[in-house]
Image (tube, rainbow over all chains, first blue to last red; front, side, top):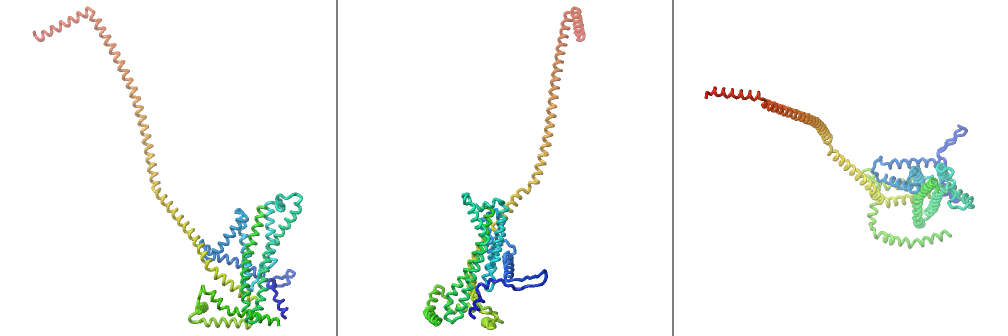
Length: 257
Length: 236
């Protein structure tokens, strides 16, 4: 019974995508649509990001209030990052980078709320995002540099004999960007949440024991709170890292080395 | 058996700490010593209440009762997620408490900086507009002044043209005068020359006639006749 209970409360259970409301109808062949927890939290994320910016708009007043100054500061930081990484002449990518940052950040922060679902722990969301960005960046590079884009795979000063090998290595390295960008985010969030779930399960078992053990468990519970804080920090760091790497890929696509 | 041994060892391990806890607490709170009674009253004061309807005791009793009911009726199930909830609440509360004041200070500094920049820009703009108004104000008479200057220049041009005409007239008159003067001088010279010629001719004729005897005789006769007449008239 205990084992069964443990299996049911698997730490990976929290990442399962389940259907909340579904519609199965024998029309158009066989129609099957459903609102999943992933879809629901995606909608929540959308409303939160839009709502946050709507509230932070401060009724378009020039002088910001205590809330809107944080948004303005975030915008200034992201703007300086784009200008430093991609270049002053390519500020056209700022809206994309800004949206991406807030999508990932708010998605990560929502996942830190207890009883919620982590969108960024979904492999399909993260990989979909990273592969889409990879394809977009590659198309951008091809449209700018045409056939010269392929010189990106040959580092300058390479001996002719090593060119086939290096091209292969560079190609694999370039292609790995499509996966690494998403996997980094997905793996960090999944690892963090799984760790918290496992630790909370252990702590719950300990707190459920007698009074002395429960009192003593307050010490690991303190460490657990620290880990929750670490997870909060990971949310910020991962969104920043993802944005920074996308900036870096864009710079490579535009400047080609 | 193993569990019992572990439990006993934990109890033993916990005992000194439990006794030591007040001492540790006294050390930890020695720098910031709020009395326990005050701390308790702070917590009680934080409970929501209204003077007439809800008392603090009522809030506490109601809250505890609701939580107990929710748990006992399995409306809320205590599980490992509750621990995450508790940990998150503690952490978020702590972060909010730690960050609130520095964030408030930072935000106010930034807002103050922006407000100062806007205020100084507004002041500079106002000053610039005022300067512009002053500079334009100095030139408020420029239209009438220009009109006066134009009228004056027009009058000057007219006068200059009149002066020119007069100068031309004077020049013409002086030219005419000089021509006429020269003509007059010429006529005078011619007349003088003619008179000189005439005088000379007459003198020559007179002299020639004087040399004529008949004329001399006539003159003599007429002179005698005049003398005789004088004598007769005076009756000398």
